[in-house]
Image (tube, rainbow, N blue to C red; front, side):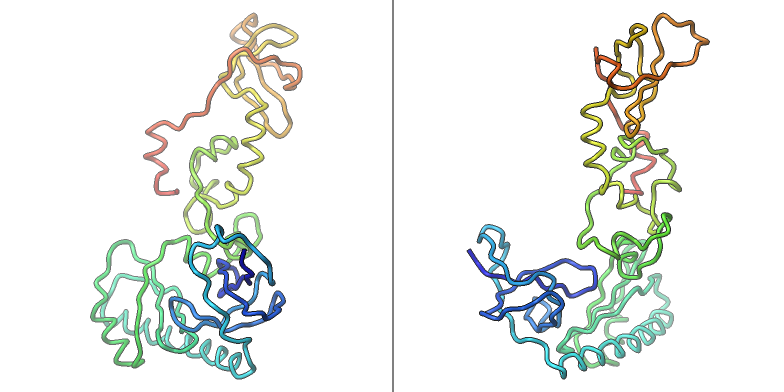
Length: 288
Protein backbone atom coordinates (compact mmCIF):
# COMPACT_ATOMS: atom_id res chain seq x y z
CA UNK A 1 0.00 0.00 0.00
CA UNK A 2 1.14 3.55 -0.70
CA UNK A 3 -0.05 6.96 0.48
CA UNK A 4 -0.56 9.34 -2.45
CA UNK A 5 -1.98 12.68 -3.49
CA UNK A 6 -3.52 13.35 -6.89
CA UNK A 7 -2.24 16.42 -8.73
CA UNK A 8 -3.73 18.05 -11.81
CA UNK A 9 -1.73 20.48 -13.98
CA UNK A 10 -4.61 21.75 -16.11
CA UNK A 11 -8.04 22.90 -15.06
CA UNK A 12 -9.64 19.78 -16.51
CA UNK A 13 -6.73 17.43 -17.00
CA UNK A 14 -5.52 14.00 -16.03
CA UNK A 15 -4.74 13.42 -12.35
CA UNK A 16 -1.28 12.09 -11.52
CA UNK A 17 -0.20 10.49 -8.24
CA UNK A 18 2.73 11.74 -6.14
CA UNK A 19 4.23 10.86 -2.75
CA UNK A 20 3.14 13.54 -0.22
CA UNK A 21 6.15 12.85 2.07
CA UNK A 22 4.08 12.96 5.30
CA UNK A 23 2.46 16.27 4.31
CA UNK A 24 -1.31 16.48 4.77
CA UNK A 25 -2.80 18.28 1.79
CA UNK A 26 -6.29 19.38 0.88
CA UNK A 27 -8.05 19.62 -2.46
CA UNK A 28 -7.18 22.95 -4.04
CA UNK A 29 -3.71 23.27 -2.49
CA UNK A 30 -0.99 24.27 -4.95
CA UNK A 31 2.18 22.16 -4.94
CA UNK A 32 5.51 21.90 -6.76
CA UNK A 33 6.34 18.42 -8.07
CA UNK A 34 8.86 16.88 -10.43
CA UNK A 35 7.52 15.48 -13.71
CA UNK A 36 8.99 14.16 -16.95
CA UNK A 37 8.92 17.77 -18.19
CA UNK A 38 10.77 19.09 -15.14
CA UNK A 39 9.42 21.00 -12.17
CA UNK A 40 5.73 21.80 -12.47
CA UNK A 41 3.18 23.62 -10.33
CA UNK A 42 -0.11 21.80 -9.99
CA UNK A 43 -3.32 21.75 -7.98
CA UNK A 44 -4.17 18.96 -5.55
CA UNK A 45 -7.24 17.21 -6.99
CA UNK A 46 -7.18 14.24 -4.60
CA UNK A 47 -6.27 14.64 -0.94
CA UNK A 48 -4.09 12.11 0.90
CA UNK A 49 -5.32 8.56 0.44
CA UNK A 50 -3.92 5.04 0.44
CA UNK A 51 -4.01 2.91 -2.69
CA UNK A 52 -2.76 -0.54 -3.63
CA UNK A 53 0.68 -0.74 -5.24
CA UNK A 54 -0.90 -2.45 -8.28
CA UNK A 55 -2.67 0.84 -9.15
CA UNK A 56 0.65 2.60 -9.67
CA UNK A 57 1.91 2.47 -13.26
CA UNK A 58 5.28 4.02 -12.34
CA UNK A 59 7.31 4.54 -9.15
CA UNK A 60 5.98 7.51 -7.20
CA UNK A 61 7.84 10.78 -7.48
CA UNK A 62 7.93 12.84 -4.28
CA UNK A 63 6.38 16.20 -3.56
CA UNK A 64 9.04 18.92 -3.81
CA UNK A 65 7.22 21.53 -1.73
CA UNK A 66 3.94 23.25 -1.11
CA UNK A 67 3.77 26.25 -3.46
CA UNK A 68 4.87 29.52 -1.90
CA UNK A 69 3.69 33.01 -2.79
CA UNK A 70 6.82 33.43 -4.92
CA UNK A 71 5.93 30.24 -6.79
CA UNK A 72 2.41 31.48 -7.52
CA UNK A 73 3.77 34.83 -8.70
CA UNK A 74 6.20 33.01 -10.99
CA UNK A 75 3.30 30.94 -12.34
CA UNK A 76 1.37 34.14 -13.12
CA UNK A 77 4.43 35.58 -14.88
CA UNK A 78 4.66 32.48 -17.03
CA UNK A 79 1.03 32.97 -18.10
CA UNK A 80 1.91 36.46 -19.34
CA UNK A 81 4.96 35.10 -21.16
CA UNK A 82 2.79 32.47 -22.85
CA UNK A 83 0.61 35.17 -24.40
CA UNK A 84 3.66 36.92 -25.82
CA UNK A 85 5.16 33.64 -27.04
CA UNK A 86 1.87 32.81 -28.77
CA UNK A 87 1.96 36.12 -30.66
CA UNK A 88 5.59 35.67 -31.73
CA UNK A 89 5.04 32.08 -32.85
CA UNK A 90 2.06 33.06 -35.00
CA UNK A 91 4.24 35.65 -36.73
CA UNK A 92 6.98 33.06 -37.34
CA UNK A 93 4.47 30.55 -38.73
CA UNK A 94 3.24 33.17 -41.19
CA UNK A 95 6.84 34.10 -42.09
CA UNK A 96 7.75 30.46 -42.85
CA UNK A 97 4.40 29.96 -44.67
CA UNK A 98 3.60 26.78 -42.78
CA UNK A 99 0.20 25.13 -43.12
CA UNK A 100 -0.48 24.78 -39.39
CA UNK A 101 -2.70 26.39 -36.77
CA UNK A 102 -1.25 27.36 -33.39
CA UNK A 103 -3.59 26.35 -30.56
CA UNK A 104 -1.80 26.95 -27.27
CA UNK A 105 1.57 27.71 -25.67
CA UNK A 106 2.84 26.43 -22.32
CA UNK A 107 5.95 27.31 -20.34
CA UNK A 108 7.22 24.66 -17.95
CA UNK A 109 7.33 25.99 -14.40
CA UNK A 110 11.13 26.15 -14.34
CA UNK A 111 11.22 27.79 -17.81
CA UNK A 112 13.42 25.00 -19.13
CA UNK A 113 11.12 24.39 -22.08
CA UNK A 114 8.32 26.05 -24.07
CA UNK A 115 5.69 23.82 -25.67
CA UNK A 116 3.76 24.99 -28.71
CA UNK A 117 0.62 22.99 -29.52
CA UNK A 118 -0.71 23.08 -33.08
CA UNK A 119 -3.08 21.34 -35.46
CA UNK A 120 -2.45 20.52 -39.11
CA UNK A 121 -4.05 18.34 -41.77
CA UNK A 122 -0.84 16.40 -42.38
CA UNK A 123 2.82 16.33 -41.44
CA UNK A 124 4.59 19.66 -41.19
CA UNK A 125 8.32 20.28 -41.58
CA UNK A 126 8.82 22.80 -38.78
CA UNK A 127 12.59 22.41 -38.27
CA UNK A 128 13.30 25.96 -39.47
CA UNK A 129 10.53 27.27 -37.21
CA UNK A 130 12.03 25.53 -34.16
CA UNK A 131 15.46 27.06 -34.84
CA UNK A 132 13.89 30.48 -35.27
CA UNK A 133 11.94 30.20 -32.00
CA UNK A 134 14.99 28.89 -30.11
CA UNK A 135 17.01 31.91 -31.23
CA UNK A 136 14.29 34.21 -29.87
CA UNK A 137 13.54 32.53 -26.53
CA UNK A 138 16.96 31.01 -25.78
CA UNK A 139 15.50 27.84 -24.28
CA UNK A 140 14.33 24.39 -25.40
CA UNK A 141 11.46 24.46 -27.87
CA UNK A 142 8.98 21.65 -28.45
CA UNK A 143 6.27 21.72 -31.12
CA UNK A 144 3.56 19.17 -30.51
CA UNK A 145 0.87 18.31 -33.06
CA UNK A 146 -2.50 17.56 -31.48
CA UNK A 147 -5.89 16.38 -32.75
CA UNK A 148 -9.11 18.34 -33.03
CA UNK A 149 -10.46 16.82 -29.81
CA UNK A 150 -7.44 18.10 -27.89
CA UNK A 151 -7.88 21.50 -29.51
CA UNK A 152 -11.48 21.69 -28.30
CA UNK A 153 -10.42 20.66 -24.80
CA UNK A 154 -7.75 23.36 -24.67
CA UNK A 155 -9.84 26.18 -26.11
CA UNK A 156 -13.20 25.28 -24.55
CA UNK A 157 -16.57 26.51 -25.77
CA UNK A 158 -20.26 25.63 -25.80
CA UNK A 159 -21.67 22.45 -27.29
CA UNK A 160 -24.92 22.09 -29.26
CA UNK A 161 -26.67 21.43 -25.93
CA UNK A 162 -25.77 24.97 -24.82
CA UNK A 163 -23.48 23.76 -22.03
CA UNK A 164 -19.64 23.93 -21.84
CA UNK A 165 -17.82 21.13 -23.66
CA UNK A 166 -17.71 17.90 -21.63
CA UNK A 167 -14.00 17.57 -22.41
CA UNK A 168 -13.26 21.06 -21.11
CA UNK A 169 -15.53 21.01 -18.05
CA UNK A 170 -15.19 17.63 -16.32
CA UNK A 171 -13.60 14.91 -18.48
CA UNK A 172 -10.01 14.28 -17.44
CA UNK A 173 -9.35 11.88 -20.32
CA UNK A 174 -11.07 11.14 -23.61
CA UNK A 175 -13.07 7.93 -23.90
CA UNK A 176 -13.42 5.98 -27.16
CA UNK A 177 -16.66 6.74 -29.02
CA UNK A 178 -17.98 4.73 -31.99
CA UNK A 179 -20.67 4.84 -34.65
CA UNK A 180 -22.15 1.67 -33.14
CA UNK A 181 -22.97 3.65 -29.99
CA UNK A 182 -24.98 6.13 -32.05
CA UNK A 183 -26.91 3.27 -33.69
CA UNK A 184 -27.59 1.56 -30.38
CA UNK A 185 -28.93 4.83 -28.98
CA UNK A 186 -31.30 5.20 -31.94
CA UNK A 187 -29.73 8.40 -33.21
CA UNK A 188 -29.87 9.60 -36.78
CA UNK A 189 -26.57 8.88 -38.51
CA UNK A 190 -26.21 12.46 -39.66
CA UNK A 191 -22.79 14.06 -39.03
CA UNK A 192 -24.50 17.31 -38.04
CA UNK A 193 -26.56 15.60 -35.32
CA UNK A 194 -24.00 13.24 -33.81
CA UNK A 195 -20.77 15.24 -34.01
CA UNK A 196 -19.56 17.94 -31.65
CA UNK A 197 -18.00 21.30 -32.39
CA UNK A 198 -14.65 19.55 -32.90
CA UNK A 199 -16.11 17.61 -35.83
CA UNK A 200 -15.83 14.23 -34.08
CA UNK A 201 -18.50 12.08 -32.45
CA UNK A 202 -19.97 13.70 -29.35
CA UNK A 203 -18.32 12.58 -26.11
CA UNK A 204 -21.73 12.36 -24.42
CA UNK A 205 -22.47 9.24 -26.50
CA UNK A 206 -20.06 7.40 -24.21
CA UNK A 207 -21.55 9.00 -21.12
CA UNK A 208 -25.00 7.55 -21.89
CA UNK A 209 -23.87 4.26 -23.43
CA UNK A 210 -23.93 2.21 -20.23
CA UNK A 211 -27.63 2.97 -19.69
CA UNK A 212 -28.49 2.12 -23.31
CA UNK A 213 -26.49 -1.12 -23.16
CA UNK A 214 -28.50 -2.16 -20.11
CA UNK A 215 -31.81 -1.23 -21.78
CA UNK A 216 -30.91 -3.13 -24.96
CA UNK A 217 -30.39 -6.30 -22.92
CA UNK A 218 -34.01 -6.04 -21.74
CA UNK A 219 -35.66 -4.69 -24.91
CA UNK A 220 -36.24 -6.56 -28.20
CA UNK A 221 -34.25 -4.94 -30.97
CA UNK A 222 -35.51 -3.83 -34.37
CA UNK A 223 -35.93 -6.98 -36.47
CA UNK A 224 -36.88 -9.14 -33.47
CA UNK A 225 -39.80 -11.57 -33.63
CA UNK A 226 -42.17 -11.27 -30.66
CA UNK A 227 -45.50 -12.63 -29.47
CA UNK A 228 -48.00 -9.91 -28.55
CA UNK A 229 -51.54 -10.04 -27.11
CA UNK A 230 -52.75 -9.79 -30.74
CA UNK A 231 -50.43 -12.38 -32.23
CA UNK A 232 -46.89 -12.77 -33.52
CA UNK A 233 -45.12 -9.97 -35.32
CA UNK A 234 -41.90 -8.21 -36.30
CA UNK A 235 -40.46 -5.30 -34.29
CA UNK A 236 -40.01 -2.36 -36.67
CA UNK A 237 -39.22 0.30 -34.06
CA UNK A 238 -38.37 0.40 -30.37
CA UNK A 239 -38.30 3.22 -27.84
CA UNK A 240 -35.76 2.27 -25.20
CA UNK A 241 -36.66 5.11 -22.85
CA UNK A 242 -40.46 4.71 -23.02
CA UNK A 243 -40.06 0.90 -23.12
CA UNK A 244 -42.45 0.52 -26.05
CA UNK A 245 -42.32 -1.43 -29.32
CA UNK A 246 -43.95 -0.90 -32.71
CA UNK A 247 -44.81 -4.33 -34.09
CA UNK A 248 -45.90 -5.27 -37.59
CA UNK A 249 -48.31 -8.14 -36.94
CA UNK A 250 -48.06 -11.18 -39.21
CA UNK A 251 -51.85 -11.37 -39.41
CA UNK A 252 -52.29 -7.73 -40.41
CA UNK A 253 -52.63 -6.63 -44.05
CA UNK A 254 -49.64 -4.89 -45.61
CA UNK A 255 -51.31 -1.48 -45.59
CA UNK A 256 -52.09 -1.56 -41.86
CA UNK A 257 -49.76 0.48 -39.65
CA UNK A 258 -47.69 -1.28 -36.96
CA UNK A 259 -49.27 -1.45 -33.50
CA UNK A 260 -47.62 -0.18 -30.33
CA UNK A 261 -47.13 -2.44 -27.30
CA UNK A 262 -45.19 -2.13 -24.09
CA UNK A 263 -42.16 -4.38 -23.63
CA UNK A 264 -43.98 -6.19 -20.82
CA UNK A 265 -46.81 -7.10 -23.19
CA UNK A 266 -44.42 -8.82 -25.61
CA UNK A 267 -42.61 -12.14 -25.34
CA UNK A 268 -39.37 -12.48 -27.29
CA UNK A 269 -39.20 -15.33 -29.80
CA UNK A 270 -36.05 -14.34 -31.70
CA UNK A 271 -34.08 -11.17 -31.09
CA UNK A 272 -32.77 -8.82 -33.76
CA UNK A 273 -29.28 -7.32 -33.80
CA UNK A 274 -27.63 -3.98 -34.39
CA UNK A 275 -25.00 -3.98 -37.10
CA UNK A 276 -22.82 -1.29 -38.59
CA UNK A 277 -22.12 -2.25 -42.19
CA UNK A 278 -18.93 -1.48 -44.11
CA UNK A 279 -20.56 1.35 -46.05
CA UNK A 280 -21.53 3.13 -42.83
CA UNK A 281 -18.10 2.59 -41.33
CA UNK A 282 -16.45 4.05 -44.41
CA UNK A 283 -18.83 7.01 -44.50
CA UNK A 284 -18.41 7.96 -40.85
CA UNK A 285 -14.88 6.78 -40.06
CA UNK A 286 -13.60 10.37 -39.97
CA UNK A 287 -15.99 11.15 -37.11
CA UNK A 288 -14.53 8.60 -34.69
